[in-house]
Length: 170
Image (spheres, helix red, strand yellow):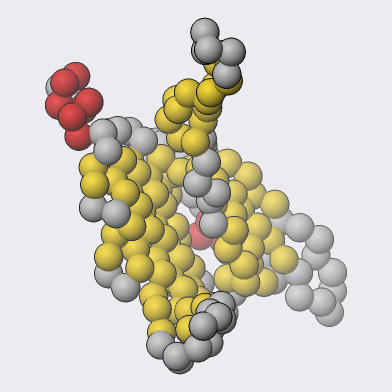
């Protein structure tokens, strides 16, 4: 049996706990990508060594303009001073079942683009938030949690860095 896609039916974006329902138009979720370095083995084959995670960046766009609450967080001290939460309600087109995806990030707004503004037209502004913390939950189950400042790397219930953190006293 073929599967139809789960479709985003409703969403909301919260910045530092404040809801932007209706204003938040688009969220570009951070790509999960490993940082790798190629190495040629003495067997003549190349492999890629896993060196950790690439920098995560979450994009968020707003109708009208960039909300002042986001502008107020620009340049705030601390790597994790800004929190952005995406809540998306997806519906399975096969069964009608609903699924809640929540992505919570902490970081700092690295780019804020006010965009073109024109009288009589709805403008669009956007922000890019560099993440020092990332957590993706589906229906209350944590699938991925990464805290770049503490070294936590949890995937589907498995803490992949627990032993290394214990070794070095973190």
